[in-house]
Each structure stands twice: as C-alpha cells, then as structure tokens.
Length: 184
Image 1 (cartoon, rainbow, N blue to C red):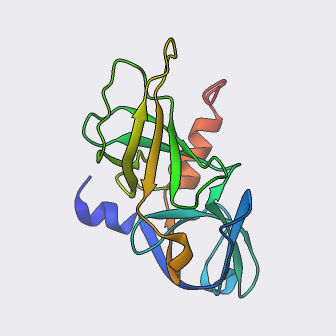
Image 2 (cartoon, rainbow, N blue to C red):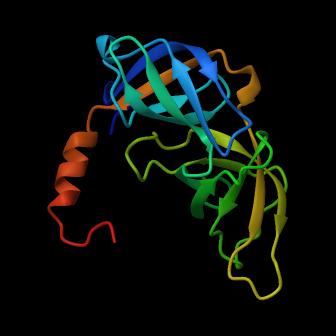
C-alpha cells in the first residue's frame, strides 16, 4: 500500500487530557473531545511519546479512554529487532512499566530492545512505540520470558493525546466475522 493511501486510511484527532489516573488497577483518562468531534469507542489513543490506550466511551463533548495502565487492557505487540510478537499488559504496579508476555524461550530479548504495536487488531497502526525492554528473565522450565518494559510515555505528564480512527476497521471486522472460528 502506498504511503499516501496508508495515511488516508487513518483519521487523526488531537485532544487535551482533562482527567487522568495512574495509581489504580483500572486507570482511565478523560479527554475534551467526543462524538461532536467524530470520536467513537474503540479508537486508538497515543501520546507524544507512545501508546496510551483506547476510547471506552464517547459523549457529545468528552470521552473516557481506557489507559494502558489498566490491568484489563491487552495490546498486541512485537519485539522490533526480531519481529516476534506477544502481548503487553500492565501488572498494576508501577506506572512506568508494563509486561511483555508470551515471548517464547528461543528468542533472546536484550535490554533496550524496542517494543512496538503489531497492527494485528486493526485498532493500533503497526509500529507505534510502546517502550523498551528494561529486564528479561527466563524462569527455569517456563515456556515464556518474563519481560518488564519501560513505557515510552510518562502517563503522569500526559497533557495532550491523539486519537486514531482506522477507516478500514469496519470492513476488516465485518470480513473476519464471516469466517467461523476466526478469532478463536
């Protein structure tokens, strides 16, 4: 796909953060854009430094974003250097770190390796920065590494975000829904 076609695939909306939590197990962010600004649930949200979350609820003038610092949120991610993918999910501890899960034992992650979005869900475009590997341990007998990732975005300093709407997502979802057992 040509770069201009890929760029036209997405709608970008800037917003100001009006409320933000980082110390709960289920953190949310309130922004000053809503349905009047073409915001809808499911849109990706990024900050100046990296991935932030997804729109949960859109009102007329405001929306609530489920933060990446929410134990219920999982995002498909990959180790940029090797291309191997897994899932990032917050463990409810420090707002500076997230876990990169399901990286198989034959891959050798290194401190400083970059973790980015895969684009698999269709919500987040491919290659958005999530963070860098801070620590990688392989517990004895475990099938997967235990990897702590230093988040690129400092959620305590989050003042502005950009929402991303994939204009092709409804077609993708509709097509995949027609294939029995596709998402199982």
